[in-house]
Length: 205
Image 1 (cartoon, rainbow, N blue to C red):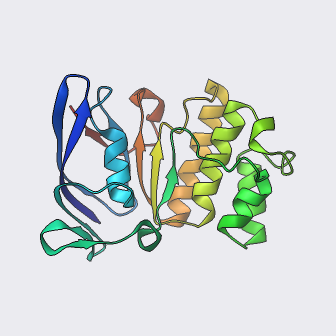
Image 2: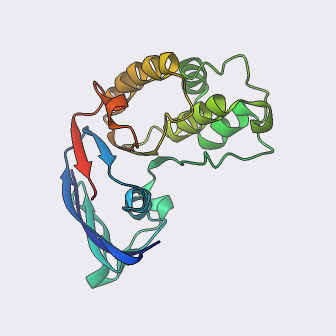
């Protein structure tokens, strides 16, 4: 269970607005997060991951307090250990596909399985510059899953994929998420693409 209540000032074109959310995410649930551009969807994921701090708030995950601004508790990202798929992929330019996964885990069988899942098993020695946008995006997803996280945060994870690849990957990810028992939040500008994957939603106006 993730119990979250946060307030964060956002800088937007019109000036400033406040991201204010109170929500509970059930264990093992997959939630699509959507809303207009600039509403704070990416900021929400970064707050949960510990990459951004809100002015006010509390986050409790499985009865463990990750954030409590009132009591000055704020666990660093390495203590929270979410699997995070960044919108810009955030890949390491000098690392090969295999290096990215080996950096996260030493489980050879799991790496092999992920490579097949993302259809990158024939590209293991390629660096990001030699991958297409869709291949880079799939690598970013695989890297997030490599640590077998209990919490997965995904920011527009399917934007560079064609419809067939997206459909196949989503079906495979649904099985992986269930196997890991992971709670998943997916930010999407196209909520329809998550039909059949997400079992809950959070709209940020």
